[in-house]
Structure formats: C-alpha cells, structure tokens
Image 1 (cartoon, rainbow, N blue to C red):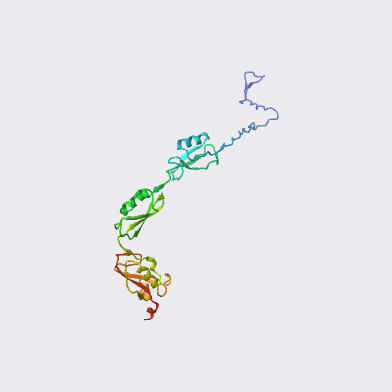
Image 2: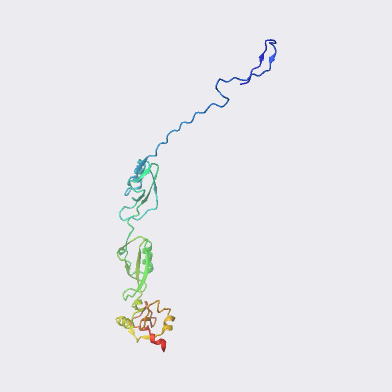
Length: 268
C-alpha cells in the first residue's frame, strides 16, 4: 500500500514527507500466504467385460454384438474354413470369454468357404497338361508334373491326377502326363546287383543285351562316387541304348545294355 502524506500541527499547510511503514498484523511475517493443496479426484477404474463369441455371425451382427458391450470390431484378411459359411466370422481375436477393456478392439476374419476343390468334377484326364495346370492353379492349387507311359493317352496329355477326388486351396497335386507309348527304365536299378536288374528289365518290352562291366575310372566318368553311392562290385551304374537312361523312356523293342561296376576290371 502506498504511504499517505500528512500535514503537521505546527504547519497545517505543510506536507510531511515522512513515509510511514505499513503495519502488519501481529504474528504475521512478510512471506506470501500459504496456498491450499489441490484436491485430487480418484480415477475411475476401466470397465472390463468378457468378449462375446462372434464365430458364425455375419459381419453386421458381429459388429452389433461387439458394440453392445462397448467394443470395436476390425476385419482382417478372410480365411478358408471347412465349417463356417462364406462371409460369416470364422476367426476372432481375442477369443470368446476373454476379458477386454471397453473401447478395446476385436479382430475378426470372415470365412471364404471350405477351400475345397472338386478335382474329379474338372475331368482333367485327356486334357493337355498346360490347360489342366491352368485350371488347377486358378483354383489355388500347386501343381507338379510327372511323365508316365501310356499307350492310350496322347503324349503331353493328362493320364491322371493325384489325388483324383478333392484337394484344398494351398495343397499341391500331381499331374501324370503321358509320355506316349513308351517303356520306362526304372531309376531304382542304380546300385542293384546286375542279375536283379536283368530280371527287372526282362519283364518289360525291351531287348536286354549282355551286361558290360567297367572299372572305377569309367564309373567316376559317369559322375558317380563309388563310396557315396554305396556301389559294390557287380552293381548297376548305368544303362545304354538308343536314348536309354535310368529313369527315362524308350520305345518298345529298344535294345538296352546294363552297365555294372567290375572291380576286377581295375587290374586289367
């Protein structure tokens, strides 16, 4: 407070320039008055409810069920499901009955159906392999091809499909493609005793010539390591003939020659 100027008794007209200090109440110092502590309101605990089961519901119904409990709903990529109808909820996260705070989000994936492909209904036998492959791949299946002899199906066309009934999206199926009217030479002959290989080829439509023995160097020139391949004396290492090779195909009546490892040939 600004001190007031006062007049003296001796000279009422004169102004006393003496400044008088403002007096303070007794017992009160010159410090600022204490400020009261703010009142802290208790924070309300978040409301937690169990997540409802949304499996099998349509997306609109699932949204309503979630919203009724104060939850949000968010979709993720659809999935194949063998039971849940197309477009109904097939998966949810968190699962049903899981505690979740209100305003929490439930993630759902709608069903794309069973994902089952009826291979038998496609009637692929006899179709060109390229067309059969395209039909299977556009239905979400992986495709592998294996050649197989067939006197009835034209070369390059499908003889059969494995499996031949049904498969599911993401599965891999095998197309058995005709190599024409040819005779297969089993790849399993490698490493068999020469007498056993002769018996196996004798049952095929081939002319089997006398087997020929070769030494270690000749075997290694075929790209075989005797130890790694477990080749012993007298075991088959190759076949020869007009286009003949282990695991290959030749026309009926082709003359083939069995080649075997002859340990004694190393000393000749």
